[in-house]
Length: 251
Image (cartoon, rainbow, N blue to C red; front, top):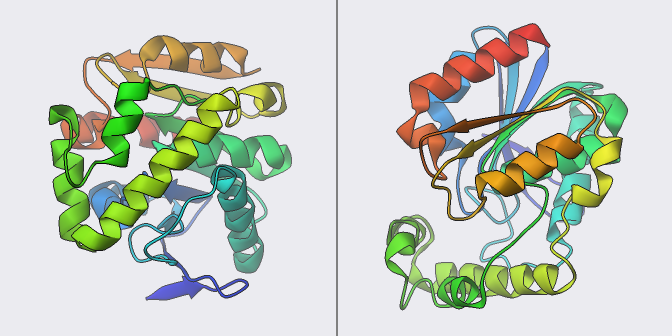
């Protein structure tokens, strides 16, 4: 096990392969284990640094209580990890919250990003009050479309800790949305590297139109829509791995 431990925090990461560096980030509540197959395939041609986001997977603190500033906090922490590893430039690849972090890191430090590739990320957060209520009570009364996530969290973290994670995350999302929903959308012009944003047609969290708007705002952005939902690494794993490998090879 490999750890980055700044200021009392404990961040788990795996570093494998050789070549250009690729930072691989799973979504909120997820783990690098969820992207294990993708990690292994990319490590055949690249140095892959797969990171559990703070509060998720094996990374601490757990249970995490998410502040409204957590995207920016985590982006700066991940940049610190790259400093620790001596990685001057890297491709940034992420799913959902991991994708949001990839975009934000590229905006904060444009010279460090060789490219960005995301799925399930849009640079901004939108959600209805009903959806936010569902997140707040995810472990006790999950909406039908979030029952798989609730089951995953309960199994991975235990019901009590997952309840704290979900309720505080919902509160952070609410505060972000009330402030305009911005994560990296206002910084789009600063993301100067090539960027590929992928969206599932039926993604309930990051609608394709929202993702397309972010891609169009990027100086070198591209948008791809596929017939799927949010978890494209599960439903379109083979296609996604080939797409990512091809993208990295070209950039």
